[in-house]
Image (cartoon, rainbow, N blue to C red; front, top):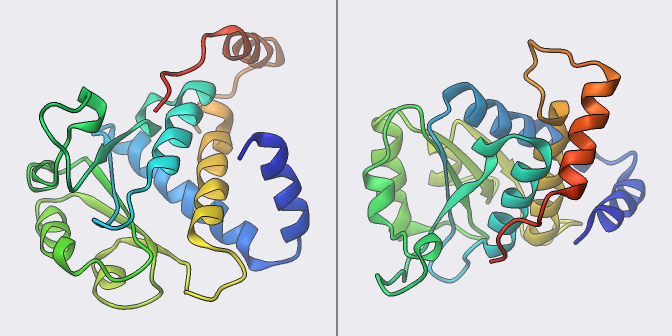
Length: 200
């Protein structure tokens, strides 16, 4: 989904709770990775890997000048022969430490993953969850954006809204630093003329 489609979707959703909810969650995500600077791990379930969200966050990280938003995609069936950015397995969650952020995207309760998420939280990792409204994952997470089954929006659509909002919060500028119009224009020109991020 490109920026034009996201803008149209936002127009359709004007007046609903989804815009505020996705922006709030995106702010929590961005705030966590920028404040801690320890990196972002992104994981789904064995049946549902959030490829699109990973790709969109990489794009948003490049366009917003916020490299911390670019996630490490943790895959349940990663193999050493896979390209480096696709070869990270679940053991990476166990190795996560304080300062890192773990974003779990799951359409249903990810029972086999919960033990690893629990260990990561005990190690000081900030856990964010996108998926079920209640259950063990929601209880483990520091922040959750609930996407109940049968909701007006599906999990894929909500991920587009979250990634777009994460990239635009502050436009890549630290909350403590206000840039002038020329600086913002210069950054926009650099972003528009830069080569595209590596495709997934």
